Image 1 (cartoon, rainbow, N blue to C red):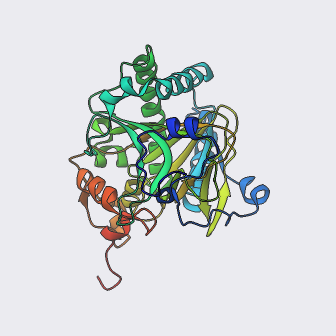
Image 2: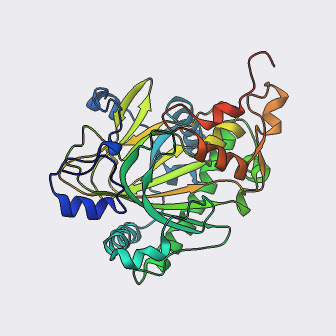
Length: 352
C-alpha cells in the first residue's frame, strides 16, 4: 500500500514500478470527471480553421476565413487548425524526441529539475498544485522558456534542433493568426502585434507525459484552467485526454490528423477587451495508454504592460486593467487553478 503522503519524483517511474497499486491520496483530484457532455454532438461542432485560406491572396477567401476565425474565437475560444504548413514529419519527429526525453534515466533528467522559479529557462518535474491541500496531478512535464532567448535540453540527441525548428514555425503561425484575429475585431492586422510587442515576445514550450493511471476516476492529469499568453498550440501522440469547457459542459477533443489544436489565452482576452474569452480546459487520464502532448504558448514580451488595445476603447469601456505580463504570470502561478481564472482579478468592477 502506498503512503497517503507519498511525494513521487516521477509519475512515469511510479506507474511503471507500482502497476495497479492504489495511487496516494494526495493525487486525488476531488473533481467530478464524469460531467462530460454528449461527446458526439458537441465534439463534432468544434470549429476547424483552414490556415491556407486565412493566408490566401484572394480577398474573398481571406475575408471569409477571418470571419470564421472570429466566430470560433467568440463562440468557443478554441479551434483546430488545418493546412498550417508545418510538416507532418517534423511533428512526428518532435513527438518521438519528446517521448525519448521522458524515457531518459532520472539521473540524466535531474539537471533540468524544477527549482520553483517560473521564469527558469528549463524545468522538469511532476505536476503540483499550490494550494493548502497540496494536491498533485498525474503528469510529468518539461517546460522550456524558449523566447526571447532559445533554451532547450541537449538530451536526447536531436531534441534541441527539432524543438527549435518547431518553435520557430509555431511563432510564424501564431503571428498570422493574431493578424487575422485583429482583423476580425475591426482592427488593422498588426494592431495587437505592435501593441503587445509580440515580435519580441515570450514563448513557453511544454512536453507533458501522462502515464496510465490505475484509478483514472480519482485523479486528473491537469485540472480545469485557462492559459497565459495569446494562443496555445497543442499536438499529441494520438491518445485522447484533452477536454474543453463549452457552454458549461466538458467536451472531449478528438483532433483531426496533423492539425494543431489552438486555444485562446488570458492575454488575448485582455487585449480584445473581452470580445474573445480564454477557454477552460483540462487533461483526464486512462488506465491503459501513455499520452504525450507538446504545448507551445506564444505571448507578449514579459516586461510589457498588457491590457485592451486602445483602438477598441474608442467605442468600448475597458474591462481589464493593464498589468505587466511577468506580473500576471506570477499571479496565475499563485492562483488556485480550480477556483476560476487569474484574469478575473484584473477585471474592473461593474461600478467603475
